Length: 210
Length: 309
Image (tube, rainbow over all chains, first blue to last red; front, side, top):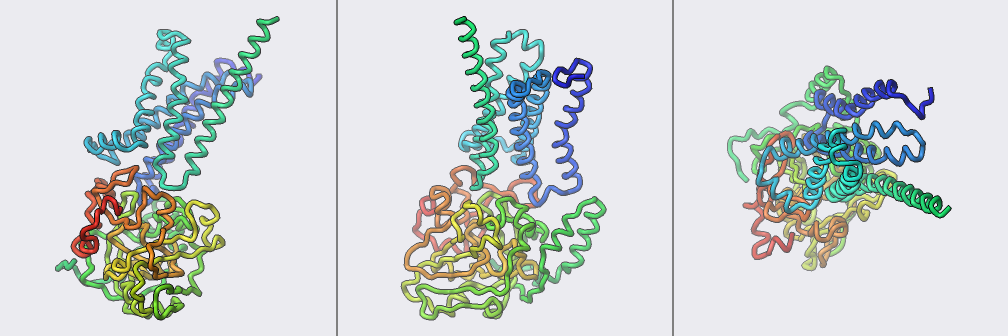
């Protein structure tokens, strides 16, 4: 079996494993909650944890294409939807934590936050932008939109990840090291994408000039 | 704030620490955890005698010792909340001297042993409001800073007091990174520093301060955001001019010199109207001057507190 070209049967077996692995952060968080290991400020911990995994899954899903191009492992692309949906899943948990645990449906406080606090504004916008991507993630929607439109829409993922990094950087009091690390990874992924696109267009040009 | 009906029992006598930890340890073992062991390891546990100052009792429920000593902002160790408790073993609090100098007639170096005996130790239950919008209630042990300042006889030029914390990256590994400008510096106006609420603090929960809470000596200024209360102090300088503090340098439009708890004046990036008292689910409204308005509001008569934030 050549692992670079995984057949459908193997992929069918791999997918549930990836699915379970992606649920692991939630499992660990729930276990910690059950064992009362969330520390003195559990709500803050849950908020930070779900936010961290949202950004992580966003970056992982954005890493699929560059990784595929670097490694030539094409079946990776078939995991991308699941990884992107997990980013949405953790974003929902993050938003629900804010809505229920942190603010407890204090709508006026939430409205003020969204309007007045840039980090909340940006974070909330990023969350809203994720919704159309999740909704159009099915094969049927992909067909209905057409490949080109679908691709254009899903390029929003980069904007969303950028907004997510800004959201994180804006809320830390002083130590920017973790948001900057996320930002650096995002920059590398964007850089790789541009590099491949640039190379592809040059190749096309050199072919057409032959 | 005189509140009748509060038993004048120091926290150290309510539940013996050993018993407290035994219970917790049992519960956590039952749950398969192990933080109780860590917690007791990071704790000196040396008793500190005091009498409860009835005038400074509070009906608010105390924040458990475990939370007080495991959830800390002490960037000299680490910028996470759990980090300081893990790193705190590196700090050596003996020998320790505090130099009191500047605009004073009798500058002096105080050994920590002498500071501990300088005035009767009182237990005071104070609210602590962090600028990050969470709060605790802590039984501190100490005496008013005024007792120390009187000893050095400030001159009429002494209009401000600056507190300088220990700078030693060997003991305080967080100082290897320039997160803030080290050493940590904080300050008060002289009338704030002389106010009876401003507590020179040596202990909490009936024992000497855990290192991660600012051992061996720190300030507690309960009507101001937590960062105003300098920890692990090595120098107190009386000054003519208002000092620039580490947080003012870090973010001049976010952290002012006064930093009085004020629900009306938001941090530029988040609201200060409410706070989460650790252990409670719903946020509670933040009180002007953290509930100490009656005692301290007079210090700021005629000042625009939105400008002097």
